[in-house]
Every structure is written in C-alpha cells, then in structure tokens.
Length: 398
View 1 (spheres, rainbow, N blue to C red):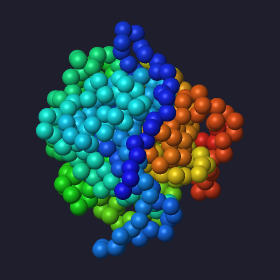
View 2: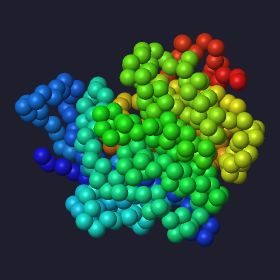
View 3: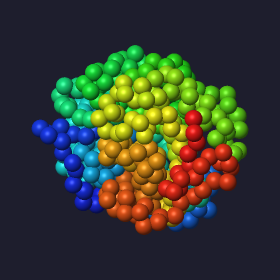
C-alpha cells in the first residue's frame, strides 16, 4: 500500500512571550496516525475478506500533536513534550512534526530501544471512526519525566490522554502531584481525556477515584460526553440510553459533580451536537490564574451550549482536540465565554474539513473572519428553556 506523509502548511507566526517563554506547555500522549483513504462509504470489514482502500496519510496523533499543532496553527506559542522510540515510527513522528515547525521536536523524550506508539485510523465516509492503537512508549511515560523547571515559564499547562498511558493512569497520586507543581508555578492547568478501551486494561481502572484525585488541581476540564459517562456513569454508558436524544437533562448534573471537585471551567464535547460549557463561581475563578487572562465577572456561573458550524466533513479525527485548542486560544485572547465556545466550535469545524487531525486548522484571524462573515451553524429545537444569543450560542441562567 502506497503511503504519503501529510505535508503541513507553513505555520502561522506564534506569539512568543518574553524571555523565550511560551503560551502553553503541551504534554502527554503522542503517536503516529496511519489513515487509509476510502473512495466511498460502502465499506464492510469481514474476517478473511480483503477490502481495497486508497493511499494512506501519515500524520501525528495524540493530545500532544492534535492540540499542540492546532495551537501553533492558531498562532499560540507552545512547547510539545511526548515520548517516542528511536525506531521507524519515531522517525516518522519527528519528520511530520518538523514539517510544520522545526522547534516542535526540541522537547520530545526519545527512549533508546523503545517502540513508538501508532494508531491505525479507519474513518470511511458516513461511518464513525475505528481506532486500532498500540500505546508504545506512552506506557512508560511517567509524571516525573516532565521537568517543569527545564521547560521554563508558560501561561497554561496541558496534559492529554492519560487514559492511554499505563504509568499515568495507574498512579493518580503522582499525576496529581504534577498538577500541583504546575499550579505552584503559576500555570492555568488543563486536563484532556480520551475514551478508555472498555475491554482492555484502561477499561478496568477506577476512573471515578482517578478524577477525584486529580481534578481538585485542574482549572479546565473538557472531556467528551462518552469519556465522562464511561468514567463516572459506567452502567448508564454501557446501556447506550444516552445516545438516544440530546443530553441536556443530565449534562448539568454530571458537570456539577466536576465543579464540586474543584474544576473552574468544565465543558463537554458533544460531537455533532456541539460544545456544552459550565463555569464555577467568581470566587473559584479568582483562585486561579485565569484572572490574568479573562474577565471573571463575565465568566462566573455560566451555562452555555454552542452548536456546530456547517461544513463538508472529510474526517473527524482530532476534531475535539482542535476545538479544545480553539477554546484555550480564546482564553489567552481574553474572550468572553460566548465567543470562546464559538471559536472552539469554529476551529473544530475547520479540522473536519481534512482527513487528518491538524492540516484543516486555519489561523486565528482566518477562523475569526470566517465566523464574522456569517458562517452558518446548527440550532436545536429541544433547548426550549434556553436563550439563543445573537452569536448563535444558547445560554441558560443559573
């Protein structure tokens, strides 16, 4: 099968902060995505049956790549920290990252004799994605591998996909200590999850205890609906009932639990239904460095629902991560919450216009201009007790 490395478009200028510091430290899971193309959606996978596909795209994946490259494309300066092996896939990860930005690999941890992580992404048109994943060096990554002193100053600390990293998910106390150190250095902290393998080792973790241990030290937490229900409401998740209608009734309840654990800004990524957001009290927001970036009066005790923007979808890989990157960029820009969730959905929509996780993301100015020119977006008839704002975002008074 012939493959091709996705050539990332020339990067947009990043906003370097004084003395070589950056806006965001992006760390966690990193892998190589192998994405075969499909000419049509009439695809069946049968044992013993050969299914012909098109050329494959090689792209980097995982939270470090998906969020990190999206931030760089939006003009946000970032240091990317992940672990790879000194093997063929590791070399491919380096080449893809450096095709975007030569400095993107400066802080990677290379494990001698290690096996780099990879994911086979099956994403035929009109079908949900299927991932075949090997964790590789991500399993040996430890919280103590991250030296915040060596990484220097930043405004925000992000860690992505601990559920796919064996040492991280099995030692929540050490992981929580990493977040304590990040907050002590004055960083706004962000945690990003991924859906565990229900039949694998990650599916056996006590995720409720994990989150109860870590979230008290997290300022921003925006999982997907599937992820948070899997971790907090496993029987309800397994029943599949949550998929039958718009999930407004229980979103408030599940996010309330996360706010009570100490998170300042809680969101839920809803795929085709957009992005749901809730924020804590003014007092909790003032207890974080978010006060240096946003108006806490505008952000305190808000409940918002942002519909998606209308696009022709080529692939949904990395859409949630790109949306999160758009949200973090919005915080650093000092936007109000209505505009922040709008830009998050806009960046996610740009992402799905390409098959891989990064190349569809446009610059901050391009994305903002596209929204300003009247980019159409969805709406919901079921949010009868919500107010639809001029921006197209729904708001509910708490």
